Length: 334
Length: 114
Image (cartoon, rainbow over all chains, first blue to last red):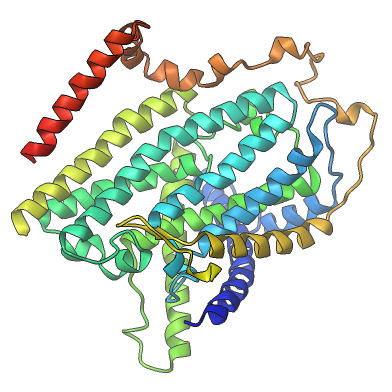
């Protein structure tokens, strides 16, 4: 692709993915609330409730506390949302390849996933509130905790590809073109299932959802790092939460369920594209249901020290076991 | 050209230029949406006091989280590990050098064997 064509493609792709990410993100939050409500024998809010909430937040006063550092307090939500959107540019959406797939790999995605959380930490510390400070402190610790199992999964999958001699094993296009299920034997398949479980358990931590919502902890910290946020600033954090949910679940879909329907459906490329997009939406919603809705309905919040123990010892250990099984599988099969 | 700034690590790659372009575009878009929101609030009223569940605001020094406490949850969860690690840090330079050379020797043997 010529330089200027790539440049224009990046700009246009960012605009389109931004609107898709924000709209789909709010939609996912609505589905999650509805599913959680039904599991608790409630009717729940309508699916469009997050859109209503977002609009209402934009109409509310945007209070800046007297102890806050105003520029950092106001910049954090905007940067959190913008950085969440950039993650989506490196991930395949539907049958489309990633907008910036040639300009960043899965390691970059892993680091970009921490940027919205860091923006929230900065906003929390800039709030000048004791609750927000404790929340920001907890967010940092949660981030350190889930990075280890997340890195284990990504390295395990890329290592398996590198053993097979695949070029650029960390690139999303290589990872989606060669799903782990296609190259693993029975032992490797068990390892891949363990890695999938690890990634599913990392998701609520990444998204600060129950049982890993210790940074916000409504009942003890009254919202933690977002306790002082209101109005349009809170609306941006709300939107970032939706976009980040799309990003994290898209990572799981890309790594473990990358298949599309376009090859099975005869007809024009447009029909194939629509079929792939619908299938992608279904896969993302299924992942959200398992990794967010079910887990948050059946579990209560962990304390922050329990979060670290869980991620570093148990979930991290599960990731290492998955990696070992993949290694044993490759030693037997290659 | 700035477009060719893709950094290669041998296994991974990324191009900071395209990330910068995309985040600038995203920031502009979001700022437009952000600008539609209500800007005002009542300055100098109770509204701007920090929310502490109705309790009076303690002194700044009283609620300051010191750097030593910043990673409390992490240190507490791994206290067994730190209980073994901290005493090793004797503060004596020769002890640190001994550790450095010992670990380097083990790594050297492992690398040569593998």
